[in-house]
Image 1 (spheres, one colour):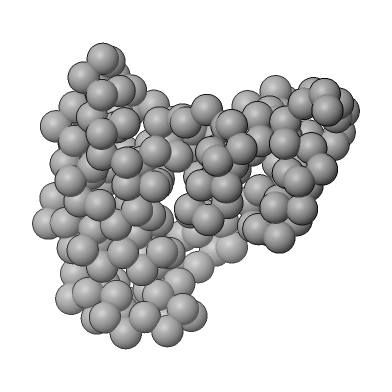
Image 2 (cartoon, helix red, strand yellow):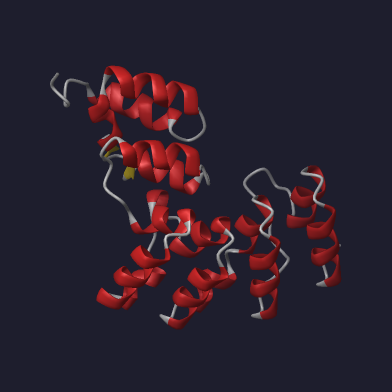
Length: 188
């Protein structure tokens, strides 16, 4: 089978599914394994990048099993310390870079729950993006990362794309410990 026997439109649709639809991704990869490397140049987003910025390790790992090339932001979301460490050793400026939609690597790392990766990014000079990653830690209920970020001056202010505060997101998700942590740090 020709692994590039799909159109850009099919690739773009697949990338949309890689944001959240594990079963659609699994089914399409059976028929067309080459979709694992799909890329939308208009959005600068790969199939793997879509799974990465949505915090979907299940979809990301499936894409990697089917030949997708690892990307730094997704490696951070997956908690792949070795990959992140090697990338930052090769080019520390990558700590402040972004993945799909230019979403900072730090935001991906916050979703992983891995404070060691957060520290790597911080030590490489990405203090601003790291502090800004609190919303992603709240969204994915990564309490240890949220505490770590708050200890480094992250703000509990701000709204998500739907206009909800961090506290409202934590409350809507029923995350009592996160709600308490945010309130302890001034969220109201």
